[in-house]
Amino acid sequence: MNESDLGFDLAIDPGPHFIRVTVTGQPSLGQLLSLIHLLGVESETWKVDRVLVDLRSVTTPFSRQEQFRIGEEAAASLSHMEKIASVVPPERVTRVSEKAARRNGANVSVFDDEQAAMAWLREA
Image 1 (tube, helix red, strand yellow):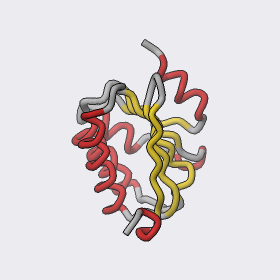
Image 2: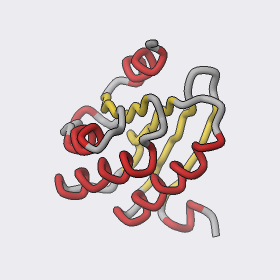
Image 3: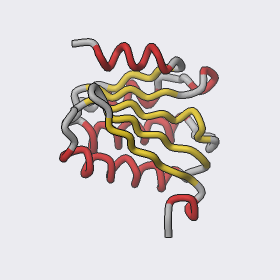
Protein backbone atom coordinates (compact mmCIF):
# COMPACT_ATOMS: atom_id res chain seq x y z
CA MET A 1 0.00 0.00 0.00
CA ASN A 2 1.36 3.44 -0.82
CA GLU A 3 0.33 6.91 0.31
CA SER A 4 -2.02 7.49 -2.63
CA ASP A 5 -4.09 4.50 -1.46
CA LEU A 6 -4.61 6.45 1.76
CA GLY A 7 -6.00 9.55 0.07
CA PHE A 8 -2.82 11.62 0.09
CA ASP A 9 0.68 11.74 -1.35
CA LEU A 10 3.97 12.69 0.26
CA ALA A 11 7.22 13.86 -1.32
CA ILE A 12 10.44 14.55 0.61
CA ASP A 13 13.08 16.52 -1.29
CA PRO A 14 16.42 17.32 0.39
CA GLY A 15 18.01 20.66 -0.40
CA PRO A 16 21.15 22.47 0.74
CA HIS A 17 19.39 24.76 3.25
CA PHE A 18 16.26 22.82 4.14
CA ILE A 19 14.23 19.70 3.42
CA ARG A 20 10.99 20.21 1.46
CA VAL A 21 8.07 18.01 2.49
CA THR A 22 5.06 18.25 0.17
CA VAL A 23 1.72 16.76 1.18
CA THR A 24 -1.11 16.61 -1.36
CA GLY A 25 -4.61 15.19 -1.19
CA GLN A 26 -7.04 14.63 1.66
CA PRO A 27 -5.32 13.13 4.71
CA SER A 28 -7.50 12.60 7.76
CA LEU A 29 -6.46 14.24 11.02
CA GLY A 30 -5.14 10.90 12.26
CA GLN A 31 -3.13 10.37 9.08
CA LEU A 32 -1.63 13.85 9.29
CA LEU A 33 -0.71 13.39 12.97
CA SER A 34 0.91 10.03 12.16
CA LEU A 35 2.76 11.62 9.26
CA ILE A 36 4.14 14.39 11.51
CA HIS A 37 5.26 11.76 14.02
CA LEU A 38 6.99 9.71 11.31
CA LEU A 39 8.67 12.85 9.94
CA GLY A 40 9.97 13.48 13.44
CA VAL A 41 11.61 10.05 13.50
CA GLU A 42 12.90 10.33 9.91
CA SER A 43 14.25 13.87 10.39
CA GLU A 44 16.66 12.66 13.10
CA THR A 45 18.84 11.42 10.20
CA TRP A 46 18.59 14.52 8.00
CA LYS A 47 21.73 16.56 7.37
CA VAL A 48 19.88 19.88 7.79
CA ASP A 49 17.65 20.91 10.68
CA ARG A 50 15.23 23.13 8.79
CA VAL A 51 12.11 21.97 6.96
CA LEU A 52 9.55 23.51 4.63
CA VAL A 53 6.21 21.71 4.78
CA ASP A 54 4.08 22.56 1.75
CA LEU A 55 0.42 21.96 2.61
CA ARG A 56 -1.06 24.10 -0.17
CA SER A 57 -2.51 21.04 -1.92
CA VAL A 58 -4.09 19.51 1.19
CA THR A 59 -7.84 19.78 0.74
CA THR A 60 -8.96 18.42 4.12
CA PRO A 61 -10.75 21.10 6.19
CA PHE A 62 -9.40 21.09 9.75
CA SER A 63 -11.23 22.72 12.65
CA ARG A 64 -9.45 25.10 15.01
CA GLN A 65 -9.25 22.30 17.59
CA GLU A 66 -7.71 19.98 14.97
CA GLN A 67 -5.24 22.71 13.94
CA PHE A 68 -4.26 23.07 17.60
CA ARG A 69 -3.67 19.30 17.79
CA ILE A 70 -1.52 19.45 14.63
CA GLY A 71 0.61 22.17 16.25
CA GLU A 72 0.99 20.11 19.41
CA GLU A 73 2.13 17.09 17.39
CA ALA A 74 4.59 19.23 15.41
CA ALA A 75 6.14 20.38 18.69
CA ALA A 76 6.20 16.86 20.16
CA SER A 77 7.76 15.28 17.07
CA LEU A 78 9.81 18.06 15.46
CA SER A 79 11.11 20.26 18.30
CA HIS A 80 14.67 19.07 17.49
CA MET A 81 14.41 20.96 14.18
CA GLU A 82 15.81 24.50 14.24
CA LYS A 83 13.09 25.94 12.00
CA ILE A 84 9.84 24.59 10.55
CA ALA A 85 8.04 26.62 7.88
CA SER A 86 4.54 25.58 6.90
CA VAL A 87 3.09 26.94 3.65
CA VAL A 88 -0.70 26.98 3.33
CA PRO A 89 -3.21 28.77 1.07
CA PRO A 90 -3.89 32.37 2.23
CA GLU A 91 -7.43 31.56 3.35
CA ARG A 92 -6.11 28.82 5.67
CA VAL A 93 -3.69 30.97 7.67
CA THR A 94 -5.12 30.99 11.21
CA ARG A 95 -1.92 30.82 13.31
CA VAL A 96 -3.64 28.22 15.57
CA SER A 97 -1.15 25.41 14.83
CA GLU A 98 1.76 27.86 14.85
CA LYS A 99 0.86 29.17 18.33
CA ALA A 100 0.30 25.66 19.68
CA ALA A 101 3.66 24.48 18.32
CA ARG A 102 5.54 27.53 19.62
CA ARG A 103 3.92 27.25 23.04
CA ASN A 104 5.22 23.68 23.18
CA GLY A 105 8.79 24.47 22.12
CA ALA A 106 8.95 24.22 18.33
CA ASN A 107 10.09 27.09 16.10
CA VAL A 108 7.20 26.96 13.62
CA SER A 109 6.04 29.76 11.33
CA VAL A 110 3.09 29.56 8.94
CA PHE A 111 3.28 31.33 5.58
CA ASP A 112 0.98 31.81 2.62
CA ASP A 113 3.94 32.66 0.38
CA GLU A 114 6.60 30.08 -0.49
CA GLN A 115 9.30 32.68 -1.19
CA ALA A 116 8.79 34.26 2.26
CA ALA A 117 8.97 30.82 3.88
CA MET A 118 12.22 29.98 2.08
CA ALA A 119 13.74 33.36 3.01
CA TRP A 120 12.87 32.77 6.68
CA LEU A 121 14.40 29.28 6.58
CA ARG A 122 17.64 30.67 5.13
CA GLU A 123 18.02 33.34 7.84
CA ALA A 124 20.69 32.69 10.44
